[in-house]
Length: 374
Image 1: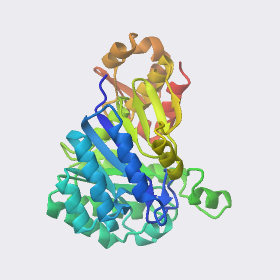
Image 2: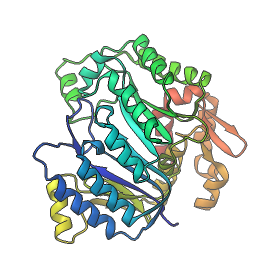
Image 3: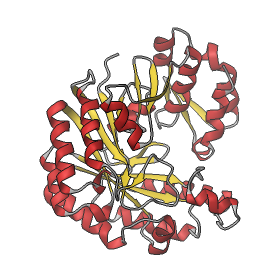
Image 4: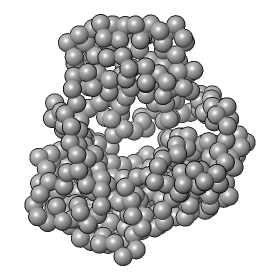
């Protein structure tokens, strides 16, 4: 299958957030220009030239200076023809009018802003650099220059966050002129400041019941809005679903460029080396900047098809599974599917198997059932 999607990683941030475990580095004194040179070289050496979707993430791509951002955008548009969605992650306080105009001029048609919450106390706890006023200004800038699609990230299940706090942030987001909301519960990842504080007994998290209440409220409130849920954590107005992320959930191929980036091409899942200097050294020596590579077995591919596909509201296509693996889904997962349907966690509707509301609330339990089935 021809791969028509790519992810580009910019591993630099102006400040390191307390909860984030992505491959990122404080931008001060980093070899940013050398990194961009090597990133451009890696893209040039790839086989792909036409893309349906391109996502530039991080770190924080907008942490780059105007000149660095222009250098990156010039290279991207020189190397690739982007026929569909061109997304950029951004921090609200870094989206100056000049930077947003630059992104628009080079064809970026979707902005994904890391808002997380509208409550200043929680922003401080998360280590975010922006203030609430920056969110409104960034959205205004994006609309002013004509960015067609704007998404905000919101988090729940945060330390010191009440259900009312989350409701308020959601209402403020819905009151803005945006097209998409991604909302995720906090996950304590190792090697983060939050994880270390939690281990020392210095971080108090909401109860499991409160976290579930926040997510359930999210689903019900979004049903009343002009956005529809299309994936466990994602909601969009008609025509504004993240086409790039759907590539992941449909278990399709994509290239990964940059330090720590992952890709899935010709049956190979790979991840590039993480440290910026290691990545630069590999590229300068004309070596592939590979950290590790696997070729998922047929059983592993079937597991991926299930736990990725079930994230989407439509769920997993029974016919597509049969065509892809040459075997009816019931032959492989019949008992598991029946058990989950009996428990009210899965439902079969026509050609699709999808999760119920309760299934989404305890989604990890549903996914694990398929990991243990083959």
